[in-house]
Length: 143
Image (cartoon, rainbow, N blue to C red; front, side, top):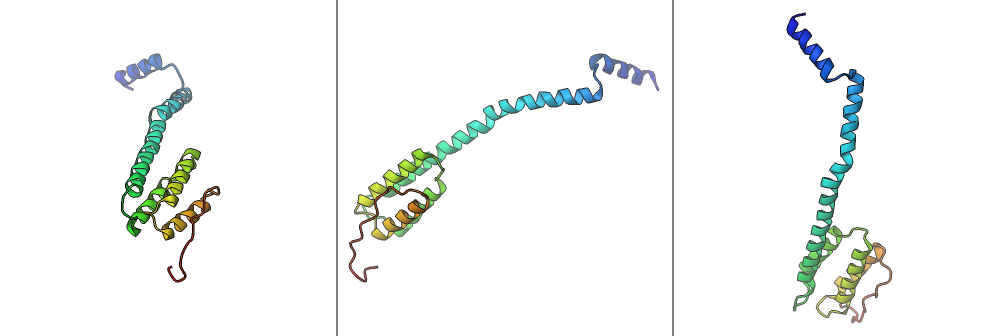
């Protein structure tokens, strides 16, 4: 061995007086203690921002589709249902929002009865039971 290698080995022993196994254990423990901080600093804010973005997108889409003066078209109905499907987490506040939106739609004259029934069936399948069924006052053969 040359003198440089011996000097480097001695310096390494002085600076790091641990065996290799101890070194690996301590460095792993150091990284493991960083995981909670990484979660708090990255994953949780991204999750919260995603939920907030979905709520904003959901509310703006619903407002655009339900607050129009003319009747809701089939294209609007598809957009509305896709919006509901995309933004339907299991949060009770969102279920309450959806219930109130549906009840507003159900009393509106601008939303077609076919569409009200379709949304009603889909919401009942999702577990919302305490909503009023759309009133069916149709003439025979209208459907």
